Image 1 (cartoon, rainbow, N blue to C red):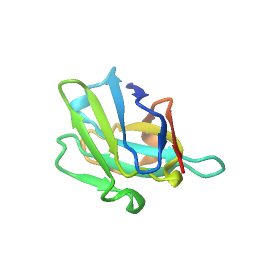
Image 2: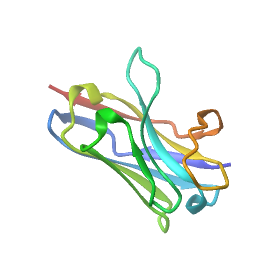
Image 3: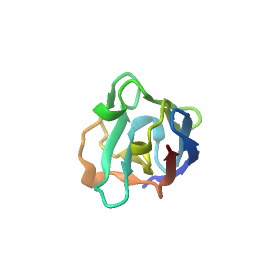
Image 4: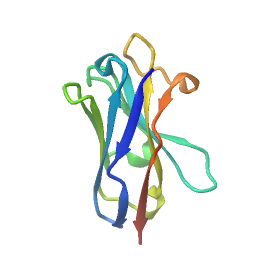
Length: 125
């Protein structure tokens, strides 16, 4: 099992920045790929970014490429999402996930993921 706790959400104007954090406990964090998803009102949860256990392989969804950056600190058991040049369409609840696959790679096997409770990000125009 793994427990995930997101923080750092809030209200920001378009063009602004936020950094989300996700603190993990309960499972060896450094052996798990991690990622971020988001869910806007009335929409399905969608992939945002993912990072493998070593931080060497990273994926981004097209809408956030060049604006968002995912990173991790395996000493602090924390994964981050730096969000720059925010747009109103980035408004959503952002969820952190942990991939339990023992390879430490990003598998995309969403049904097996552990999830945090989410943090609200609101971008005003």
